Length: 179
Image 1 (cartoon, rainbow, N blue to C red):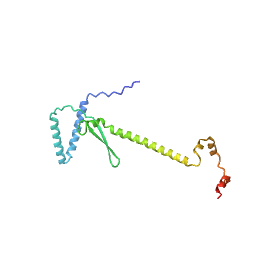
Image 2: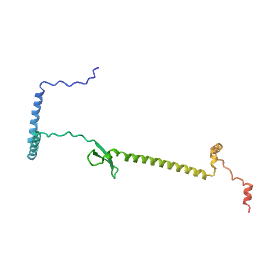
Image 3: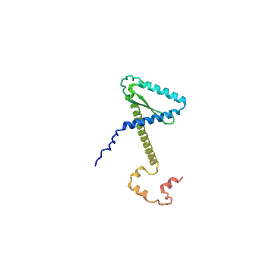
Image 4: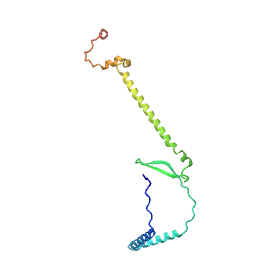
């Protein structure tokens, strides 16, 4: 199977004649359009055309090759509405110090590291606070903490609650209540 791209059709022998005819028709069409333009606009176009022709006839001054300057990303400016504008400059433009281009990444990186460190510390403090709350509830409860480690206590918790009357007072409690 031939996968070569289709080639361009050969140029006809009378291509120059076709181009010349097209140019004449285009010039005639432009001329009729130019006759319909108001006089003041026509004069401005005539003067602009004469200046363009004069500029084209003048030899172009030799220019030294100009090296393209690479853009440098500058700090981001954040507006009051939360929109951000990225400022760009050029190397060697004199509006920045040379070390900023090399160390400009340092400040955002330090801010990121400080933020991550702060988030880690905040999570640790939240974890400590929740553990302290659980410890306070366990220690303030009527059940001793050693009961939670007992396997029988977990089985006791699984049993349904049995409604019982008030327990009978013990003899030592009766003696303590006598005057």
